Image: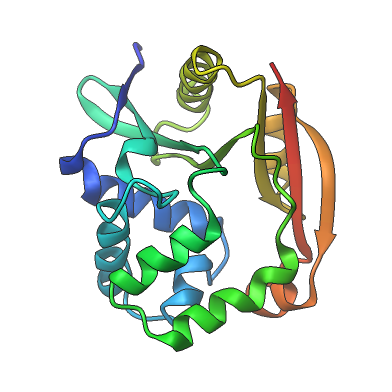
Length: 207
């Protein structure tokens, strides 16, 4: 089986939105976008994510930040990589407002500020690493990560970081196999109350 990795295009928004929603839930009943959009229907949430994907380059989930893995022409996986010095949380909030979010949604997001890490702007951040059912453990995620790290090196980056939830043993194991190590951990009452997880961990890779 040959895995081909390509940069996402604007017309991939439907697939990317679905993968973002799946990744954000991570086997939880409620994910980040369910929380922001107050447990609306999947159709409503997916439409909002599609707007974010095509909003502005400074939004971390802008479509150009994504790679898509394909097998026999079928989309089977995604990985988002972004530069935190450009794609700040403030830019994400700005994109949310432009997508029609009210101030209640912004307030819900700000409630999670206590879980934020002090991210080094000289790093590259990874998010939404996800593969579709039927293609688990066949090298999709590794191919996406290798391609993204190669691109990062060409841009001059030597450090990559990602955030995983405390208790997400499968995700932690995958990243550890790639050489990521835990740099910091935050246990947050708000995160536990909202998502049922104790908090988040910041993982780092020198490459």
